[in-house]
Length: 146
Image (tube, rainbow, N blue to C red; front, side, top):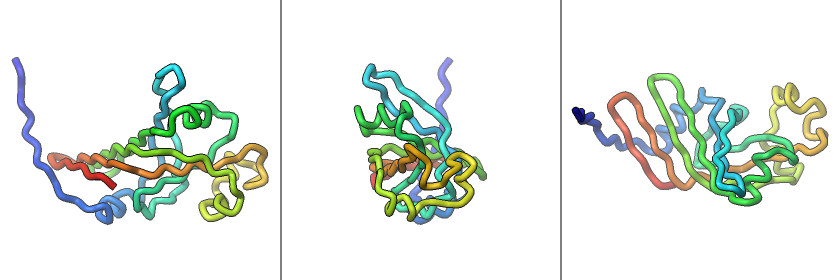
């Protein structure tokens, strides 16, 4: 027996989504390997959620995600948070190695993962520029291109 679920399309704007995202720190960051395998892992956006379609993540140069992004920059970010909010963001990732650009997104709390701060060998910054966002919040859902 099939059941139909009735949903209602919502018309939220990116600034409304940004307000809802302010308390969301951890997402599932998904890349695709050169063999086509999807690789997902939890990542922190470092509280950098003045969301305008850009997300930033610090990581290490030698990680699998860097290899995946060099092969295919298309990525997916999935967030869930308070008030039954779920977000799925797709976009392109770019690897930033410029210390000046990394300084704009550095927070002292990141030293728990990068002991020498921006002087940590192999530290890089990932910039994900969103192209599409889907959201679900209770019976409402919507999507838009950014």
